[in-house]
View 1 (cartoon, one colour):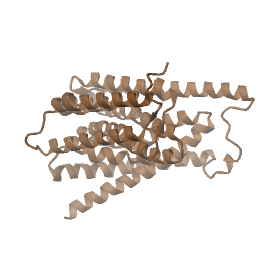
View 2 (cartoon, rainbow, N blue to C red):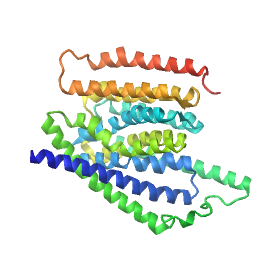
View 3 (cartoon, rainbow, N blue to C red):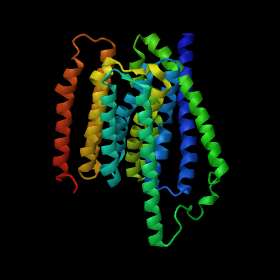
View 4 (cartoon, rainbow, N blue to C red):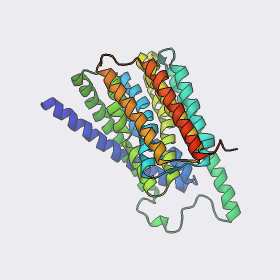
Length: 368
């Protein structure tokens, strides 16, 4: 009984440290970014999204260093599926989510392309150090392009309004976190908590996997993925409740992008010459589910430029079905359908039917 309670305490303590660390990192970095003249949408797509994905990066990096490569890959793939199906679905149930044009025309096609790239890189059963470096390079290019685009737009708006670009709004200097030393301290404290929390979480997750008799990959796809995505849950739902509905979507899309490029990129580099072995079950099922979840979001965004409550419910149902199948497969349930049958015979028709229903509801085609 003792070791189990210790693992549970480590797991919960790790989650708390990750959430607090991500909050401190996001607060400090977002204030710093706004002071540098970056727009709120781009802050949501980069600083906030990357900050809320910091737990995934910390856990994946710690897992690779500790030799639990299955946990590292499962955490990223499971987090993206959780973000796209569960978080967007739950947020849309709270309030229908508006989708910014930039997300529709630029960010979602980019995320789809990155997901396809990962599938291509993983086909040989290994993510090499070169693959990881390529993903990190793509992240650098993506971030620089977003910041440059945002600053150029801000300068144009400032010139048209005859106001200085990038300056804080009147009264913002009174906030306790408006000063540069405080912002840097928040970033440092946030990073320290992320390192500590990820170590605790990985240690507890490995213990859970051994005691339950399931693989580290399954633990990563389920428990760890949901746990490290708690900052995204809190951020998206809070944004939806505050009426910042496009930021709720931008946070999820940006987090998924960072998970694939940043988390897997760093993990691949840290794995060294051996690379990250990709489990056959990921190649046959989970990576394709992640791609399907990404693809289904783009038409949902196009139709009416929002995610309705009905569409949110459909996303939640899709996540529940995926989670049920993963857990049943992990237990070796007899008579369970093969992954390919579930993917192409059940999931694909459901996705197509959901898309057709969504387009019929909106009565609109793709925006010109």
